[in-house]
Length: 183
Ligand code: IMP
Ligand code: MG
Image (cartoon, rainbow, N blue to C red):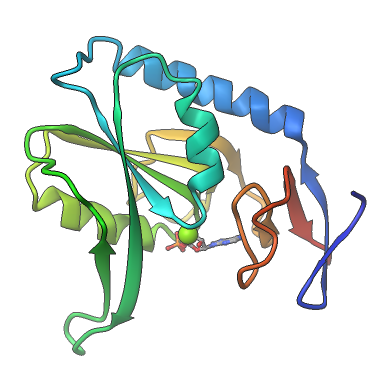
């Protein structure tokens, strides 16, 4: 498809299916190395953030070779008190993560604020470790506060992208590759 229109905006092809496939294999290879000693008892827990990460999660997990378990969560964010600022509530985490290795999976990390907030909350549940995996990491030269352990695609491109799970106001998640907003 040469062009995709969502809510009156034009998106053009940006990252091909082939590139996505290759980058996910690379990402999984790094994970397979890091968690190669995992057993059924110590299996890392993937915590995948709905809705955006569902496509990446499905493809990534099928490239991993160590035992793992999977939990999908949703984040609902609301304005807290002035001192708390924006509060993110974690919905659906249905297992005890104490003492376990956690791998958070998101679709895209931009400012990193969403991920930092979630990481802080999960740390309070005393996991053994927390790693962050993302399909796309929008790298900004300015912020180094969030550690991204596994990124399939790293980009300095700042424009809005959709497809492969990513949406523009709900539309575009079904696109098999990544499209970028046309300037
Ligand atoms: P952050 O807190 O700034 O890292 O924002 C992360 C969230 O913003 C992601 O989980 C996405 O839902 C959304 N987001 C940021 N950039 C894009 C984009 O280019 N396309 C689609 N969603 C995006
Ligand atoms: Mg998201």
